[in-house]
Amino acid sequence: MRKLLIDTDTASDDAVALLMALREPSVKVEAITVVAGNCKLEQCVRNALVSVERAGTYIPPVYAGMPRPLMRDPFVSHHIHGADGMGDMDIPSPALKQEPLHAVDAIIDYAEKYAGELEIVTLGPLTNLAMAVLKSPELIEKIKHVYVMGGAGLTPGNITPLAEFNFYVDAEAADIVIKSGLALTVVGWEIGMGEAFINEQDIDYLNRLSPLGRFTVRCNKTLMEFNAGRTERKGFDLPDPTTMAVALYPDIIQEAFVGYSWVEYKSQSSYGHYVIDSTNLTGNAPNAKIVLKVKSGLFKEKLFGLLAEPVNMCGENN
Image (cartoon, rainbow, N blue to C red; front, side):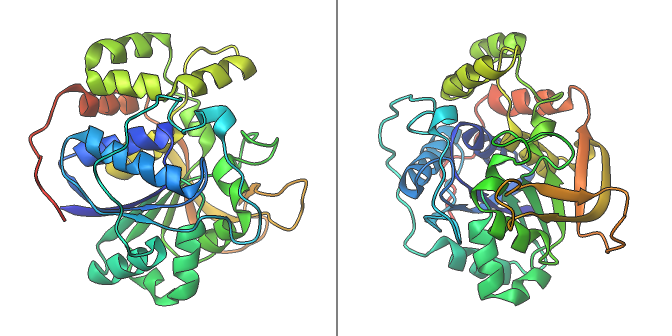
């Protein structure tokens, strides 16, 4: 069985991605590490614990990590995901608690424990993983693969004209990870705005589908409102679940290429921009697989299937 570690700044779309992974029987989520991003660290940890409880399957340990970017002040997305990161749902406090170990050390420990097997899915700023790489450079050879939700290298960004949120929050960390030598698949924000966009018909279906379907719609309420204010499309994008689908089902990728890339952090006006050398102008060796398109309809098929029915996996603990 595949072994996953998920690094997340848990807000509404991260929560859906966690549900997907925890309900997919072909993988086991060995650990969840949390980083500040969409909200302050404590709120992101709380949302991760809530998501584990909502999944109704098993209970991986949850570790709190970096409370701020490497070099800059924190930047949150309350205007997108709500003050609680979950569409202002006012969710009761979870019964589960975080583990005492720091998330950076947890990443290093799990990479050593499952050397050559561990796959990491990052859903937030890359501060935790960058710190792990800096603290223990040898883990690069121990991690099987990293799936990164970040960047918008071939389209406009979603937080500035050039930058996507995760890379913008901590571009220094993102650049460290991109250039680290880790085996990387990068799924940009724009992929979730394509075939994976949840439209009005999908929302109606999710509301009829199951309690988890309704949870998915409700926790993305403020994201829907944000989208309505900037586009003519009614619904919400799910970049983190799209990345999770790529990690869980690699065959979902319809088009991708390998190329050299980096993240700009020296220029204020283009800070966080994911620069992709798509025509090999630099002559540098490729350092990432960049997803361009996922198969039409397959993402939603997988998402709806995972949210549809209860699964009998409760009681399993790490």
